[in-house]
Image (cartoon, rainbow, N blue to C red; front, side, top):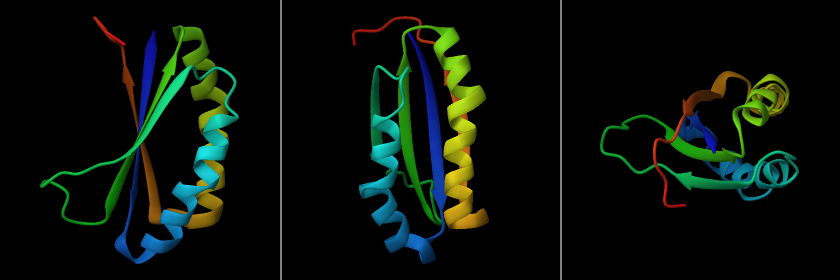
Length: 104
């Protein structure tokens, strides 16, 4: 199993529009991803965040090949859709996670 962590950072002035996007459009895109076995979409709560809002998306893949395909194709599509709608106001940060041990 391999994991991709995507963090979406948005500024407060897009809160309502982003909230609507998180409620409908983004989950629909995630559900349509072929190689994703499981996912977690969550609000990030942290005292270290003083500006804007962070939302985390963990995507779980069977193997590194499927994750690589996602990064090369699907992430680009998701990023383009978000950029078309929100411009530079939503930034996406990706982190690759390689579990050493799981109880999932």
